Amino acid sequence: MQRKITHLLTQGPESRAMLAKLRRGIGKEPGELPELFEIVFENLPEGFFGKGGEPSREIWAIYTALTLFSLHQQGKDRPMSASGEREGETSGDSLGAAVGRLVRKDMTREKTLKRRFDAVLTADEFTELAHHARGLIQLLKTEDIPLDYPKFAFDLYRYQFDEARNRVRLRWGEDYYRVMHTKMEQKEGVLS
Image (cartoon, rainbow, N blue to C red; front, side, top):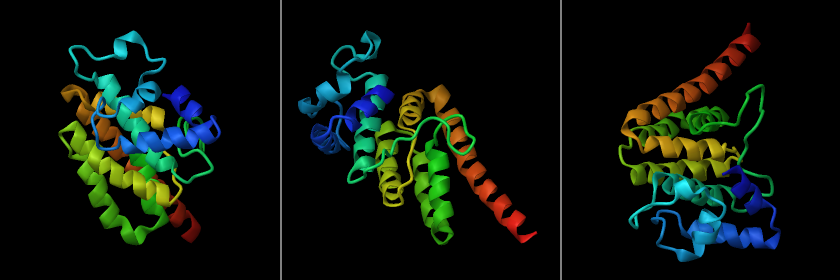
């Protein structure tokens, strides 16, 4: 996933064209837009490809993450995928942490943003999750808050398994409240 994002960001004018193609795929199934095959399928391990004409869970996760990344990156000069060390963390922000940062930027919108985040967390069907995640990605884009897209793709993959779905939800929720709690501690430290 990281190689795909790096490739998308380093192709000069061709990058914008590839990202525009990917944006057309938002909300569609893998396979509906053959012009996306090269971007999505290139250099994937053999085991990631579907069988019997159905997209695999890996393809769904990569396709969804790439199309949402293309929306997030639209019109931005700096990468909206941030993985690696950040503020003492060992990896970039999960969806929960990124939404927590979004809320911290404007606490007056906390209830509205939390309601949108809850819609993602309570989605039982993958396309429903992707639909609700799209709205959050648009808000993250507006506030220039990056997301760790390789981590997001892995979370999307795991979300498709009943036995792992609650663990993904739990981590996103923990990350959200961890970011919110850190902000509260910082405020209390300033006041004391």
